[in-house]
Length: 195
Length: 195
DNA sequence: GACAGCCGTTCCGTTTACGGAACGAATGTC
DNA sequence: GACATTCGTTCCGTAAACGGAACGGCTGTC
Image 1 (cartoon, each protein chain N blue to C red):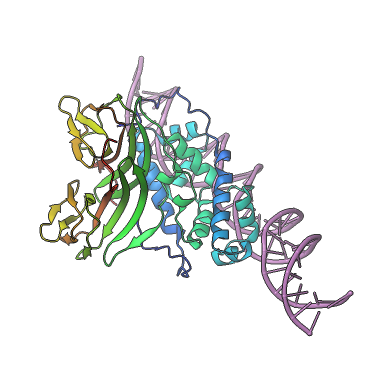
Image 2 (image 1 turned 90 degrees about the vertical axis):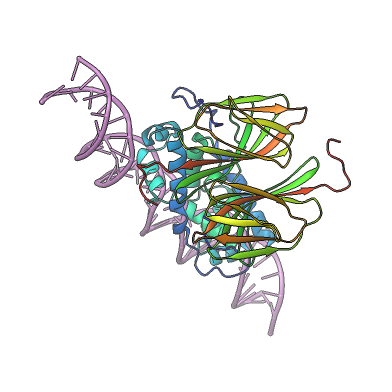
């Protein structure tokens, strides 16, 4: 996931390899199915597809049609977007990020990213406008992140938050790559909350 | 957590209709192609698929395979998630949730949701398998969530986490709807094949 | 006008994803 | 023990998605 097949518009992709993606989809589907405590046979029955189809799909030995994928994920109660790899990849000097969702609420706008930092990397970001905060949850590895003069440390499953209206840094600690989600909150200016 | 016990053998999902989705995908692809000023013939050439395939895909008269869809969207510089529907998946008695992404890391699987709770609502979820944790960040409103016997409170921009291997609840405080993101972490079970 | 080039669609033989059935393994019942 | 049930995988005939080629339509060149 977040595999480097960085999708740059215009640039000639050196060789798209859907094969490196398809098995992941199968794994995600199997994971979702097992979380629900459903057997392969039963999911196939419910979704109205053959067991052979579902078996091959989960094992990545088939190249499913959109309809097959749709009926299976629908039975699992998730959308297609939940199992396919997501959109625009953004690059910093060290970090790779995928914008999962951007949206606005009353009083603030949000961007939700999934981030990947290679082991040994450091990323520095300039200050955001006043009032902007970042909320970071680490999935794997250990990351030291936050204001440049007072960073915080988070390991797998941990969470840190800071005001990002000052320069801030991200540094990978240890030998593992870091995977994390980052929520950036942009408060609306000249507008009081609760209005 | 969310997808409650509504996965009973008898319970039938209200008729999945992939047909209502497939033509949309074709329209989105055609739109993306035209935005880039590329002809159908040229996109087919670049992506290495037949013109017949792309024509049928854009017109919704074919049921494309995942590989076809992947190579085409990759050439357009977008991910698959850009053309498939993010399922407006609704679970639970009170909450509405959209699974933004499901993925695996070494040692654990993750599901990242975006949640919406209407004012005044309460949601109860049964216990998850041992070791599962939930990580919730509130965007708007105030939510009281966590283990049923010891819930925590989070307002806008705040974060709470808890072990979800016991029954847990979500209760909206105050008069504002609650928007939040929820990360659920499933540690890998011991019997699982290595990854 | 004749021709060349590209457009998107349609035709058609080949490839392959499909579902049903058969398979061995694992588990439950008496 | 014998037997039934369910598991996930594999085999196989059929249906359909695939790429190549041919099609009519449109545009620009001489």
